[in-house]
Length: 490
Image (cartoon, rainbow, N blue to C red; front, side, top):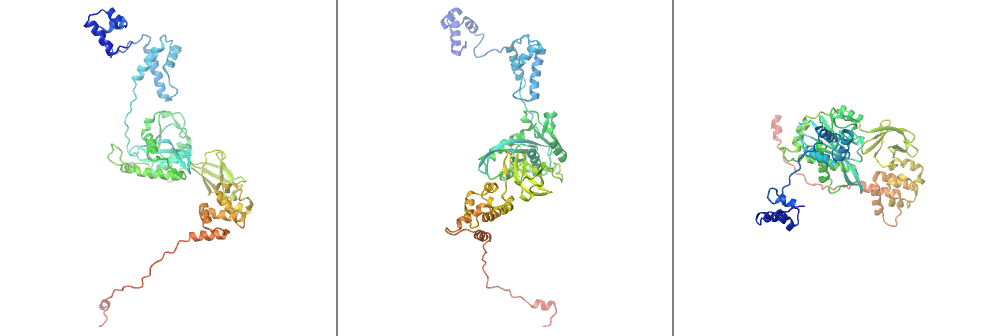
């Protein structure tokens, strides 16, 4: 029964002032005689409860050591959802140690041991050039009016707190390696060590000091001469600087949610803000980030002359549709390369195709499945040979607005004229041609020559007029100076 202050006051008053017996007080207040006996003399007060401190005899030193070991194992593994519960420790004690006590006894011991191990952190201080921390984050943006989730590669120098952030479609190995290289170029040098977590893009197996790096990350480390250091699992505090950076970017750069045409435009926004951050002064620092960065930069390792190739590269054959396949998706190349073997270099956001060392196509990388990315200019030569396919060709429908296709059907030359218009579309863009469509007077039959004349008219800049000065002021010259210099007789 809970005894509040009012009831305690009545017990004390009835016992002390009215000198009533404990039995009479219990009968009057309708409470237990044991309760009256406990509080009537004032030896105990209801607002202070004595903690149960008796340690059961079953909690031997061996049992307590076993419980401590279970807790330490959980800390070392760092797996949040696979930790010992008090019940699991109890069952292990019964099975492995022949424990005779109750589960509640073990539960109390576990709680007391955990209370003895408070989480505490040590403030770290790094020397200039010594280290940088790396992390991934996620954010939502609008790319070409589509709401998508993108991944942010973040690196932060530990001394100056200078930042680098770059957006990628995926957190894959190509993006991770490219992010590191771009960060080194942004900082103008290489930190002596990189602190990262145990993500699969960097770690093959193990974690922390036992981690085995992926082969390509180890090659990157060898080329740029930095030391790899991996955090313990679920220990975000070991790279707290960059953990804070991820949240700062989302709150300060990506609010309101950016609306950009492509990921390159988003990365320009991120880079502008990274450079702007150098004028910021962090609380507790006497200098700005930029001033401290200059000290940091002077002690970074110099960049090697050869830039590490972070791409995933393969060789494939161009199929009959003038496309190549990479990672479950297809990409177009010019039709003259059908049947040829070409090389693909896939980076985080870009995919580049080469033939005998010469770049023949570049696309934004796709991460879906069974998608085909076309470029209209790759098929113009083929359409000139097969013009009847122009209005149903998929590369055309994917890139040309329906309004322009309907306009092309009104041209006198039909499909052949439409192919010529597509060549103009490649050079000037479909929006420019649609502007010309609006300028041609109603009732006038459009022709390819008429469209070209409008394009030429708009491409030639207007001649600027300049006022002609019809009077010139000439200062009078004293010619006697020359006579005296060359000794001409007067």
